[in-house]
Length: 80
Image (cartoon, rainbow, N blue to C red; front, side, top):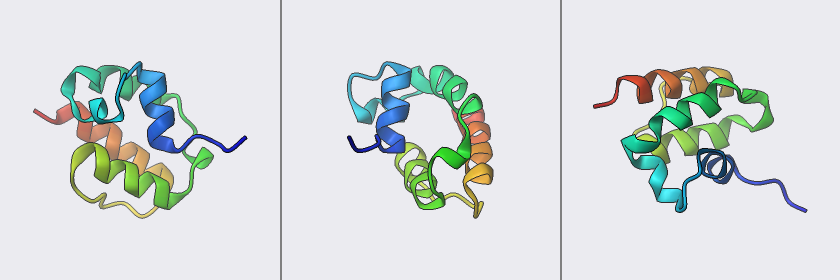
């Protein structure tokens, strides 16, 4: 059985009925909680870059999975 993509995993863990719900602030608190407990090494750098871009609509500045995870945590915490 193929492994879930990072986006699918995040949506499932946050209880999002639709993948696009990850864009909405209503899911940022559970998303942050999931990200804080997720080992960045479980997914490759490219998947982290793609997920960051999908969720926030911009490119990550960081190069590695762990740094992108941290940047995403920070970005969803301060996004208004």
